[in-house]
Length: 145
Image (tube, rainbow, N blue to C red; front, top):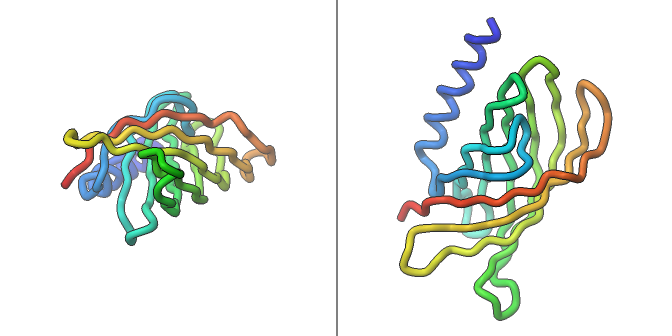
């Protein structure tokens, strides 16, 4: 049963990630491992859905955050963003958490590449109740035009 659920979630994730405006890899702390498939889906001019799927620690980790974009950060070519959303780990020790996100991003001119770094504190609600402040990550994504 666990394998069927895992395959179903993975297949739905691939279909969802195929419609992304930016698609790449997240390095650092993510729910379920140290590397994740990372995608951005535009919802409006000033907001995006930022989703991650990672495999590790005996299961699947999913983070889906609704981020608000703020442009630019002073005179620098950086945009900053903040958002919130759920985080779920499906595996031997399942968890459900509420996660916040605060980050900086930069789209490289003349190359369809985006680089961003963020911090994601999380309030773990299920299996235990705890606060975790250590989720830092670097995202490298291809920008679809």
